[in-house]
Image (cartoon, rainbow, N blue to C red; front, side):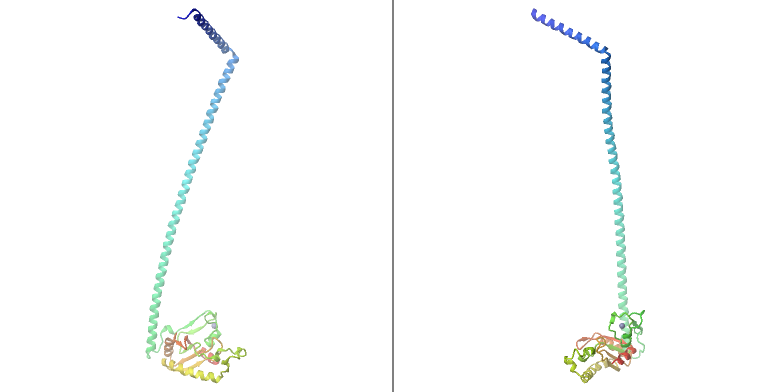
Length: 307
Ligand SMILES: [Zn+2]
């Protein structure tokens, strides 16, 4: 039980509280009834609402922006994927086309190789047959006509005019490189053996006599040349007659390098000339390889006139 003093103190405290509450209520009531306060309160609420709407809008804008970016990213992804597919398809098409082209190329190469092989086989067979016919012609005196392959004339440039030098001497200093036409029979009674008779007197060009005066070869006379030639003649004619009867034998006495020591041998029959050609071609005489070819009559006369 509180004492008298304490009870009074509590009572007073209670009284103060009540007064304060009453005052507050009155004050509040007074404020509530105050139009300015009401106005302020209303503005305050509108402001809050405005702020809320503004916040909401910002949030919405952010969401819209995010969605827009997302949609853009999706679209970009689809475009990229489509482009990638397109590129892959093109690459695949290219691969297919290349492999098809490669296959076609290989097929073509194979076909060409087969064609080459076929032609080579045919050519070899043709050559063998020709050699056979040539052999028969050489062996059989009853066969008067040479094989057809040999009854032709070979021309180096049929569309060009005839080479004067070659036509006259059967020897052109331009050789294979000559742009004019060289016409040569595949077979004739006359064979030409190039640079067959080699002699020191024929080694020196006439125009260089003065320069070459110290050369001991120049002391050789025409008589020496004659003697050496006779020896050569005896030596080779003995060999050449083994192939058949010789009707003419001439060496070109000319110091020009392409004519020097060229020997023409005319046989009584083409058959004999062919035997000589087949047997002598690529054989060696005086350690030099023989180069034998057929010559025509014009060349023979022209060359001899020049000696
Ligand atoms: Zn020529």
